[in-house]
Length: 284
Image 1 (cartoon, rainbow, N blue to C red):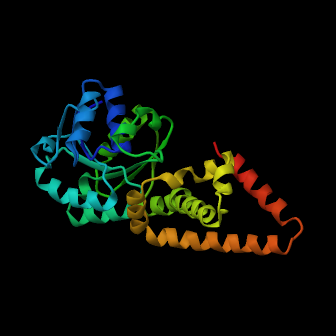
Image 2: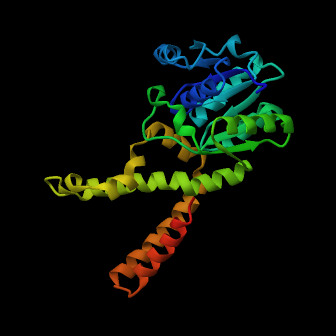
Image 3: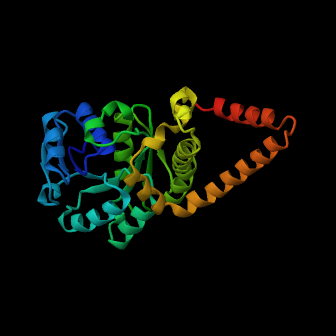
């Protein structure tokens, strides 16, 4: 692996897990990190995930081969502005965000498109922070790359190879397709889980019987409702149009289901579950 110095701006669950995974496959790599809290850096240093840390964007990042932007979408955009004057010619920039359109726009506005490859590891947890980072969560996860039109093919090839070394499954998409796809398979489900959880909260009996008896099925489909409110507000604001369009489609389907159930429409529920079972069973 040619790249040997990696920078991380923010060390949360995903950033921390990638840093750990790089350390796992390349023990001699130099890994440096920025975090708002010194305690986060101290924790990362203690477990050997990074070699050096800082609470300020400075020259520590000036000779990195690759820098991962791992803060929320809006914060990454601001960090890029601070980082730009420090970058060497060799540095490739990437991010790990769940939305790509906004970061690509910022990269182009800053004139950094020839060194940017968007990245999105399709993995995570309802838990947050470096304390929950674990390189194992990347194993066999799809890792979407969204290169700009002007970044070099060599850089894309190197990043692709790194993703494979990390144990992930790389997939190259355009940023617009990425945002539409992730709105459907990630963003809308998170909102649906939050809404369903709040429905039970608001509909529960005075003595909390619904909460008491909520079992595996309900807990499985609402697990992601425990995700970070800050992170998910940022994601939904950054991908609002795609999410709203797909939510409208989802609401229409729920209204159709509601009408069929209320009318006791013979065979409707059977056909609904037959179609969903066939599609869900086809997932690898």
